[in-house]
Structures are given as structure tokens and as C-alpha cells.
Amino acid sequence: MAVETQTVLEQVVAPAAPPPVSLWDGAWAVLAKEVRTEFRSHELLTTTAVFALMVVVMFSFSFDAAREAVRNFAPGLLWIAILFSGTLMLEPAFLREQANETLAALRLAPIPPYSILLGKTLASFFFLAITEALLLPVFVVLYNVPVAGVLPQLTLVLALGTLGIVVPGTLFSAVTAHARMRELLLPLLLLPVLTPVLIAGAESTAALLADPPEWPGLWLKVLAGADVIYLTTSYFLFESLLEE
Amino acid sequence: MEPAAGLGVSFAAAEKRYGAVRALRPTTLEFHRGEFTALLGPNGSGKSTLLRLAAQLLRPTSGTIQFHGPAGEVSAAEARRRLGVIAHATLLYDELTAEENLQLFARLYGLADTQAAISTRLAAAGLAGRESSLVRTFSRGMRQRLTVARALLHSPGLLLLDEPSTGLDAAACDWLAEELSRIHRAGCTIVMSTHQGGPALSLATRTVWLDAGRVVRDSAAVAQTILSVPPSSGPPPPSSGAVM
Image (cartoon, each protein chain N blue to C red):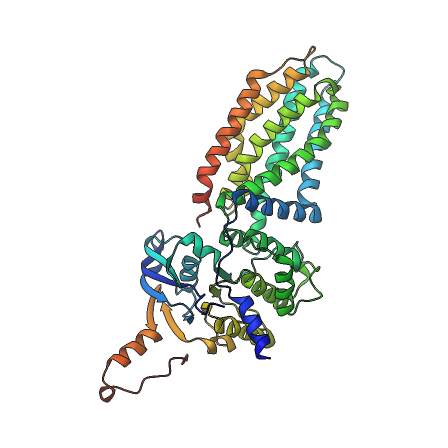
């Protein structure tokens, strides 16, 4: 009995602390948690995908897809659908941590604070990418825009643009999680910041969908530049934003 | 095992304000390694603020907070790896199973050989056989048991508890007291806030009373004062473990 008690005590208080957890290890743990939780509840993906599809379908009723002019406005419609559905998806990113104060649990863990944001940003990127993968075929059919020849380039544009949406979006989700009227506050804060991404994304897509397709070098640089600025800013701001 | 694995924490004129509200007035206080301190006081007296400062969830507006290990001062980052927190909220994810919750926190704390540790903690919490159940299906008592398992998973040297008995029935309170007694005997420093009685309170070796954000009575200070006075000139000293 005494030996058993001693064994339990040794398990409870160990003399040495475990080694530090790296930024990426912490981010992967948060990402895995987000993905597992979402695939169990399907809350975000279902609502976001349905919303994005509704936007694209409803706009298609307003325009004649047979007209050549569709190539001019279709890229903008695609990016508006992505932007709005992204905003819808990003709002609960930190809100979900309020239920049992789990954000405090993440903050208590010995991980770099940016791991929390990075993990959530990667999860948002993943979920929005899935939404785009569902959206793109519907967009191609409804607006009669062939993308087969430029699919790799279009994927690059979508990836850079999606990153440009989810990085500031996840950061602002952390800012607005405790605010009243957060449903209004997040789009109000986010949409002006995302204007460069919207313009560059739409212009890049328009160039790729032109006949013949063009390489949107300048607009891709704008997208990449916006991503770098957003990532850098979020890295330096996030820890102070976590303070209660 | 090394008996002095506990982690001490000292407040040097530490103060926390929210605008004009002084949640904790300048406080100088030390929780020694291996001590079991009960923080007592009415609602709004500053108990939770003091614990959140010790947990590094809040930064003091002024003053400093330092941690002490067996070999002297310990950095805040190092201390975070040795901190365990049991709060009002469970700090658990309802959409994850009991085992997945512990796996997540094991990863966040960089623990190796987690499966054995998780099984041990779940068994100790009386949750063997419920590993694969979602936390949202648990009763309040089961959640609190899992919360304790989560908090002890990384063998903390300093355990901070904020009203841990809230909502627990008598049997769960007894179980909690037994767990706390066990880890205290192993050398863990414990600081527990409560405004209720209960079995856990009787374990405290020191009591600190707070009111309106200031320490109004400290049993350690009282004992020190009495011991410093010649025996013939004062009343007999109370037992050091006396609580109420």
C-alpha cells in the first residue's frame, strides 16, 4: 500500500519540467484540434459553403452567362463570394473558445502565443480552401468560364488570396470575440483591410480567365505582399491582443 | 523523487487595475514552495484576480510577480511549464472526448509517452471506460474530475484553484480533497480560492483573507507575530493548520 502511494505521488509531482514546445508544434496541436472539432460538428463548413454557393447562384440569375461580358465581372463575383463566406467563417474562430474559457487553457500552455493564432489561421485557411473547392466547379458551370487550362495558376491566386483573408480575419476575430455587436464589428473592421486582396484577387483571376489567358505578375506580387504584411503585423500584435 | 519540486510565487507590490477599478491593491505576499494556501473572501474581493496574475493570464498594472523553484528564481516561461490551473470554467473542449482533451493538452505541454500518462490520470479520476465519450455528455462532477486530470497531467509544481468545489456534490468534493491532499503531500504548492467551506479547505496550511482587493489577514503573518512575542505576554498561538 505504501509503495503504491509513493508511486502515485511520484507521478503527480515530477522534479523536472518538460522541454519547451516549438511554435510549429503548438500550432499543429491547435490546428489538429480545430479540424477534429469541425469535422465532428460541421458547423462552419456547412454554413459557409452553403452561403458561398447561394451568393454565386443568386448572382447567376441576374446575368446572362452566354454574354462575353461575363468574363469581366465573374472574377469579382467569385472573390466577393469568397470574401463574404470567409468573413462568416472567421467570426467564430475565437468565439468558440469562450464556452469553457478554453482560450485561457491555450494561453496557460507553454507554447509561443503566436502558435494559437497560427494554428487557427491554418485551420481557417483549410476550411476556406474546402469551400472554394466546392464553389469553383459551380462557378465554372454557372458563368461559363473555362478554367481547365489555367487551374494551377488559379490555384496559386486562390491560395494567396485566401491567406490574405484568413490572416487578418483570424486576428480580428480575436479582437472582436469579447465585443458586443461583434457580428457587425468584424466585417466593419475586416472589409476595408481586405480591399487590396479583393482587388488583386479579382484582377489576377480576370487575367487568367481572359482569352487568351495572361500571367498576372503584378497582381500576384500585390497579393503576396499583402500576405507578408498581414503575417508580420499579426505576429507582432497578437500577444498584446491576448491580454485581458 | 526530489521532494522540493514545488514552485513558489511571490507578489511584490503587485497591483491590478481595470481603468479606475482596483481589482487588486498593491499586494506583497509570498506563497512558499510546498505550502497549501486557502484564499478566502467575499465575491469581488480580488481572489480570482490574484490567481490570474499568478497564472500569468493577467499582467500586473504595477509591481512584480516572481516564481521560485528548488534552485532559486525561475523565469516566467519556465514557471508556465510547471503551472496547473483549475478555474471556474472547465477549460475543456466539449466537442472532444475525454481522451482527446488530455491528448491535446499533453501535446501543448510537450509531454512524451502521453498514452500511459493519460490512461493513469483518467483512471485516477474515475473515468476509465469513458475515454471515448464526448465531454459534453459528462455530468458536472465528471467534468470537474477531468478538469483535475487535465491540470495534473504535466505534474505541476504550482496548482492554482479558483473555487474548485462550485457545483460539486459532497462525494465529488471529498474526491477533490483527496486528490489535493495527495499532490500536496508530494510537494506541490497549492493556492486555492474559495468562499465556501468543504473538505478541501481543511487541508490548507495557511489562510489568506482578502477584501476589496487587499489582504486583510494572513494566518502565516499572524503566527509569525505571535511567535515573535514572548510567551508570557500574549495569548497561546493557534495551530498553524487552523482554518476557521
